[in-house]
Image (tube, rainbow, N blue to C red; front, side, top):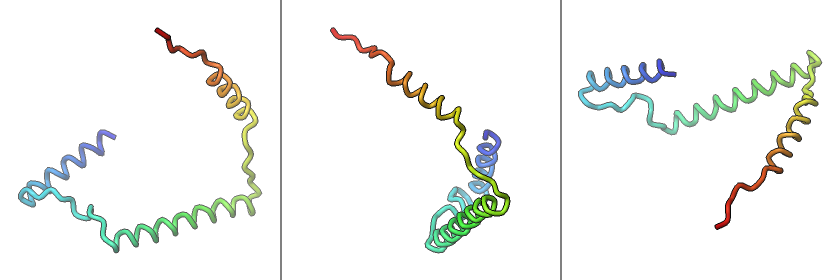
Length: 91
């Protein structure tokens, strides 16, 4: 994460140096064309991901099953949260 921030800082400084004080990153302002392309890409990627999941379920006979231990752990945690004593003091 720190490497990405350092790379962004260095690239911003290089753009600022070569563009003579205009640090606006090229391509950062959303235009209608970029928003349209983003929407098309988002829809296409969601279709591909859902088709992959569907094909795994159908052809590979994979099934999604909720872990029974998870349900028991959630019940225990819910009870411990609900049954916590009130720590407010009255004056």
